[in-house]
Amino acid sequence: MSEKAYLVQVGTTPAPETIVIKVMENGPYEVHGCPPLAQAIIEQNALRQSWRYRAGKPFALTEKAHLCRCGHSRNAPFCDGSHRTAGVDLTETASFAPMLDEATVIEGPSLTLADNKQYCAFGRFCDAGERIWNQVGLGGEDNDRLTERMAHHCPAGRLLVFENETGAPVEPAQPAALGLIEDPALGVSGPIMVTGGIRVESASGESYEIRNRQALCRCGQSANKPFCDGSHASIKYRDGLPLPEEH
Image 1 (tube, helix red, strand yellow):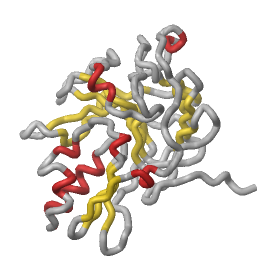
Image 2: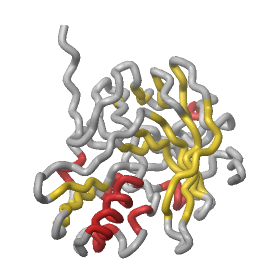
Image 3: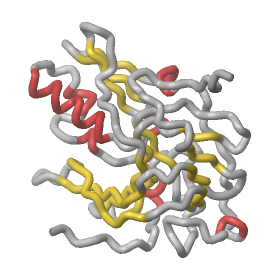
């Protein structure tokens, strides 16, 4: 029997089918396959621009782990049942269409940038240098490498870079893993960064497009559930987890 066919974004290598995230109706994320989970702390450069991720505390997952998506758990990142009384609407509203279908395209001398701002997770890596929307148009090796760097650090994958000459996406493969975004510069906790082509399945049973980089809402306030839209920044969401000191 052949495996079920899923929609896969260009440039993405799907994770093993045993690793999957299922969105529970009005409930948490049910994670199968025990992918690595750890805090991913956004660090700034000397210009106070988002620049890299620092690994924080790891969390061990059971074979069928439940991660909070209502923003009210007192046992973050795990669900403690708070969604039942929190009064948060967890209805999924995101499209199942390919992200690139509604992306804005900006063509530079050697690279083309595709940007679907509906999936912005407000990591602000795109604001480095001259900002990615300008950087892609400058051309030259240094500008191209910075453009690629900004896109590849975008936790939500809203930014995808293509080579003009070949039309191929510039999207390095990543391991299947989960990161709890922490943003000390804003004093907030962000989404769950999902890397490595992990499939996300709706409560309806339909799967969203499999992508190399995704960001799942965990504050409960996104208008693009289950994906992050940056709402955690405006509501000052904090998961209550301490940040380890940098060594």
